[in-house]
Image 1 (cartoon, one colour):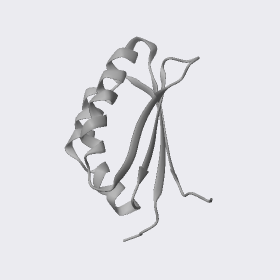
Image 2 (cartoon, one colour):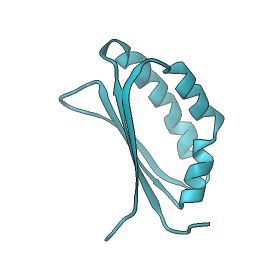
Image 3 (cartoon, rainbow, N blue to C red):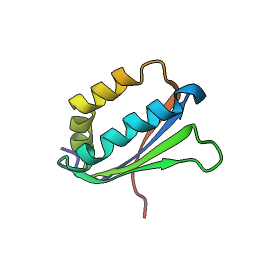
Image 4 (cartoon, rainbow, N blue to C red):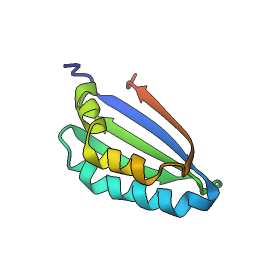
Length: 98
């Protein structure tokens, strides 16, 4: 198991007509994810100029625990619920330098 902390930056761009749906589904992920083993923080942001743009800033104890999170049912439910509603999604796995 990699014991190095992992930062995740996930950018979700909702289709304008689906923004409310995507936001609602993203909000459902917060409490359940924050309770997961290894989750240090799981914070959702919405862009001040483009309200269709959401960003999760997450910190995990290590990559293995984050990968376990990615296999959870609540994420599969989110993907199913937002099928066709997301215009773009990017994810960055990052490590703290200092």
